[in-house]
Length: 373
Image (cartoon, rainbow, N blue to C red; front, side, top):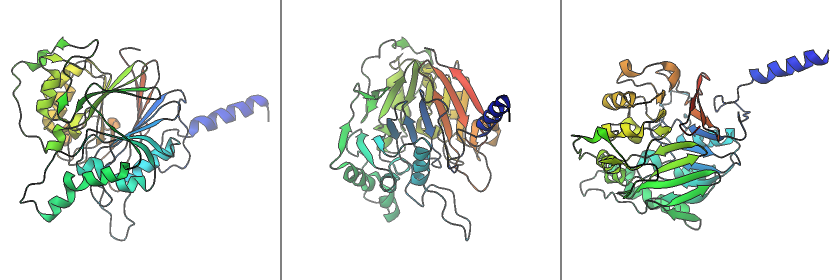
């Protein structure tokens, strides 16, 4: 065989092997070893996002549900479906991560903290980050089931997990470097930024006449740990399940955070958050951690689709409740089909600010330019 033919054969084999495929694939190679890689893990309407820096430093934000809760239903005679912890561990393995350097908990609701014990049995973590103690007290009339799922029950398990390990109680304004990731906390324990960040502080025209909304979904949502994450020229915002009124404090009358490039929709796209003033963030790319029936509320979808400058709106699940609002299926990781494969949305970001989003289900991708690119 000629050297030319050998080279062509090798090239065709290389491009035929998927590099960001389903987590069930045994072999994974990063597309760009110099880039930040992000996996928005499908934890069925819960929350879990894995960041891995070019030098392999890892940050996991939230850990989804406990086993047997929140996941797809098993069919009769079939083995139990993968838990949140299973899917997170598989995503970590696909990126060569054998331990979590930083495990960050935005708040202590079950769909965020419930997967921690089972995850740590699979994947150790070195440093734990939170907003401080649980603030949501169970009412005296709570049922046994409500108590079993309550933050007051799960917070002690979180505290037990970090005992003897590194632990950071993050405060508003605090900064943390994780390799080449730069975190700045903009909300924590019910507090928000008092003064705008540098380059922020512009008047927010979306605030005019915007009412307060006192429905929160629980005090722990109010206390969510929210952060601006910077990698090279790209700005990423994750506010956990921060509530409507806290968004207004952060955004009105001026936007204290400024514009961002990539935004994880707050609160799974439930209408407890995503107030119209969030349009001032003006993200280029939006990712939503919704479930088939949870989150992705109609008014939130319409608000996000109206963001100025938005170029890509990606979703974890097809919305069964609002099929007319789903849009292009290429931007949805999991369609309304069975069995549920638990596909993730993956993101590859260069230092210069090229943001490539990949749908793990069909390998559909789009590349965007961060404002600082």
